[in-house]
Image (cartoon, rainbow, N blue to C red; front, side, top):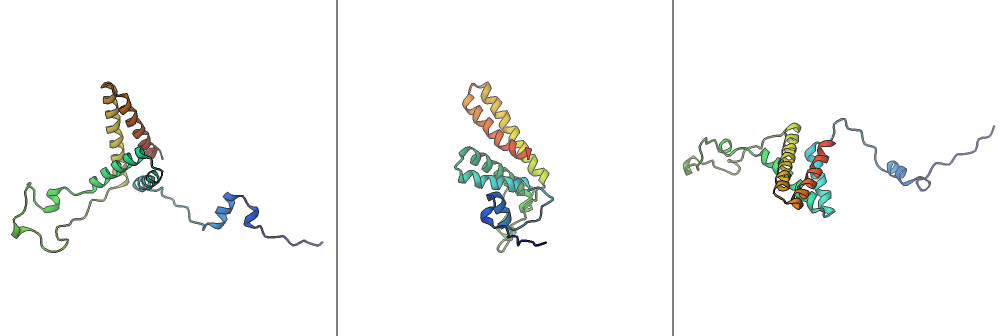
Length: 153
C-alpha cells in the first residue's frame, strides 16, 4: 500500500474567517465577562470614530456619572465636617498631601448608576411627551436604547 504525501494546508486556500483564527494567537477563554465600565469606554471610542454624536454624548455623560460617583465627598476628603476652608496653619503640607484615594465602585454600583441614568432619561422623555415636545422625547428614547443595550449584555 503506497501512500501519497499529503500537502500541508496553506492559508491561501482557507476562507478568511479561518485564516484569521489560524494567524491570530490563541487566547484563553475568560470566565468573567468584561466589566460594564470597560464596555462603555470601548463603545465610546467606537462611537467617536464613527462620529455618532448621540452615542458619544450619552456614553460620555454616563461615564462622567460613574467618575463622579467615585469622588470622595469634600468633608471626608479634607477631614472637616463643616463647609469652609482650613486656616493656613491647619492645611496639609507637601506635594499630594491633600489627595485622597477615590472610592472603588463594584460592578453592581456601576450597573446601578447606568440604571439611574436610564430612569432619568425615561422620566425626562415622559415629561417631554406631556409638554408636546416629541422631537426631544424621541432623542431621549434613542439615548435610552443606547444605554439599555449595555444592560442587556
